[in-house]
Image (cartoon, rainbow, N blue to C red):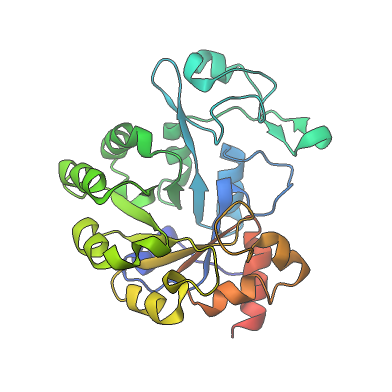
Length: 282
């Protein structure tokens, strides 16, 4: 399987809106239930080794103000500890071990909860990360990227008001790359979103296949100005066109999404997704 040989190739194609159905690894996992914890350094390394150079990560902030990778606000589900991350210091966080798997089958690994800076060190010169849960910490994210000169490696996302996003982007002189989450209700405001925020990508969410926001004509129109991101995740708004359906009948799941020709597709099964793409969309 070939994705992109280098980060530079991926980055340039993202900037030039030339990607097509590129898989994004949800929480850094390229196949759900692998023996690798989500949002871990091991997951990021694994993505890079497998040629999946675009991954999604989540951020939380510790009691002493450190950004760490974790989807949940507590450590309960993913570690051998318990408690709110906001009530714990980084030292306390680092004393815990991450789980892999879920439910009765989850097992303790040797992996620790990584800091955002540690994750950046892994992807530096190698990959791009979408910061999903992180808008609340956007100022800290910006200053860390500025410190490390890594703006080209991160795409931060939100669904906040145009005014709030515009103010942040103006304050940062638009140095940070931004993705805006849109729904069918945003169709009438699309020109304002594109003109005011200049997003590098739009995450398109839809509840019905017939929604205007996911129509072929609008997606093609949007791609003249930005990258279009669709989700195959079971937890996303995608009218049930998700990974679970795709594992049973990929033509009705991933196939339907791929026919929309988005630039990016987020999935929990990047390798299987890409194999299907290469087999069916030649």
